[in-house]
Structures are given as C-alpha cells and as structure tokens.
Length: 119
Length: 107
Image (cartoon, rainbow over all chains, first blue to last red; front, side, top):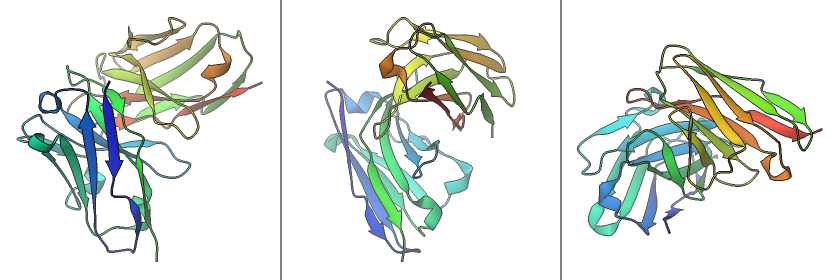
C-alpha cells in the first residue's frame, strides 16, 4: 500500500523558513516523479513543484520560483520542500503526491501538513 | 501558464441525478486532463486521467470525455458519497494547473 506521510508544518512568522518532509513507503520511491500541491484554507488546489526520479529535473509554478526548493533523498525514501521568505499567502495545507508512472496525473496523495504564516 | 475554468462553481443535485461538470483550457492541451474528487477534510483522489481513463477502483458511474480545450466529467447516477468538490487539472508541459473546483451539494 502506498503511504505518504508529510511532516514539518506549523506556525511560522512572515519572512521565516520551513522545511517540509514526506516519508514514502509501499512502493519503489526512486522510480517515480513526485510533486507538492498546496491548498489555502477554504480555497482550491495549487500545484507547486515536482521533481524527477533522480532529482535532475525540477519544475515550479511561477508564483513560487526562487522561494521554494524541492528535493529528494532516494536512499531515505523522502521528499522535501524548503520554503523561504514565507508570506501570509503561503498559508496552506501542503500535500506530498506520487505522480502516475506515465507522469501524466497526480495518483497518490498524502494527508497533508498545515503551514500557517502569521505574526 | 494554462488557465483552467470549471463550470458551474457549484451545483445542487439529488441522489440518482445525472451530473455534468465542464472544464475549459485556455489553450489546447490534447487529452492531458485529469479529474479529482475531494471530500471535506480529506486529500484529493484521482478519478479520471488523460481525459477519459478511469482510475483503478473508481466506480464506473464516473466518466470523462473531451480533447483540445473542452472537457466533461459526468456522474451517471449521483450517490450519497459523491457529494464533494471536483477539480480538473491539466498536465500539458511542465507547469500544471487546476480548475477552481465545482462543489456538488445535496438538493
């Protein structure tokens, strides 16, 4: 069974930084592209970034380029999202997502971790 | 970025009704279109991928169609567990976007 467990969320002051983690199990982590998707409270879904199996390719939504960095450690079956210069609009639940084999859809989702940016 | 527009934003329906949700892309995306269901407080769930392929384990009352810029999600006979918010999402190119969502409520 595919399991994706996010951690690292919490309350952060504006301008601060946070590193989100996702522990993956139940599949061969190094064989899949992985994504982060976020959802602000009461709002819709926003794809944020994804990363290739070996980490050699990374893509980001324009609105976060330069502030967010996606990375992975295949030896630890873990996905990460470093979020810098946090703003109120970064307040959201952040989901770790396994992409489908064909890299055409977001097939398996974690339960999410909440990041709240507030003073 | 490719913009995705869903309609309606919300709808009220009864158990047993046929429900149709549409999604329009700001440019042609071939069939790189997926549909997700999100129940309150839960993570989204993939229903349909590449416009018309049913994800494993998803009931056959869900179906998808379309190509290019116009797409449709149909629920043939709405069940109690289908009351949720539905999102389309395009996976054309390297920057992916979602529609704003359609909330399906009980009439």
